[in-house]
Length: 260
Image (cartoon, rainbow, N blue to C red):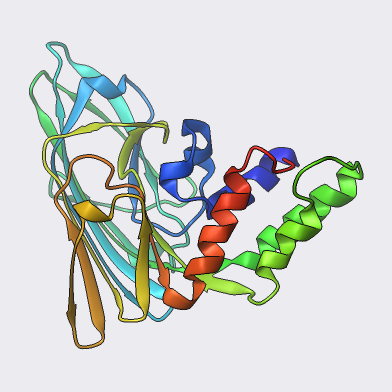
């Protein structure tokens, strides 16, 4: 039960404030991600990465193009897990590997491969996903934990924390995650990256690294872009009206006084 609760509440924390273990359980809607399950993260380098998404209503139409290279002097046998949160359906996810189509299997979203020294493998993923994030599920899990614990501690009480969510049931969220990582914990080195996030004009970005992002607006669409190779994961996009509650939530959850 405790792991289930943490998986939900940690989804509200921005990536920049998360520990490595917490990042794996972060459930905010995001780009498709490639998770290396075999081999060391230092065996690979991302030589090309183009990530684009357009958010409209409750949907996100995202594409992720990644070329990954074996930078060792030995063959590397590995497997990739495709992490795609909240897909509209299996038919709304399209995957190509080295130009060949691969059916997305939600029950086993993996691909095994072997790379010779210096060889590359290319992944091209297109997915329509939901950006609707259920705040009610967070509230329910916290109250279950409070009922199970029943002990009084110093610091924030669960009832204080849940008051942050009383005004909404769902919130639209989108996060730029680590995109390519080992086990979802350890980011892989990038030599090139291009990220573009197009959102409705009422959306804003919450990040500790605003200086690495460019912004422009055309009509009712606001576009954020970055070619930075470091810290591009620390960004969450959401309606401007949700911004202050979201930041306040992060402060509570990351506080040493929070009753975990």
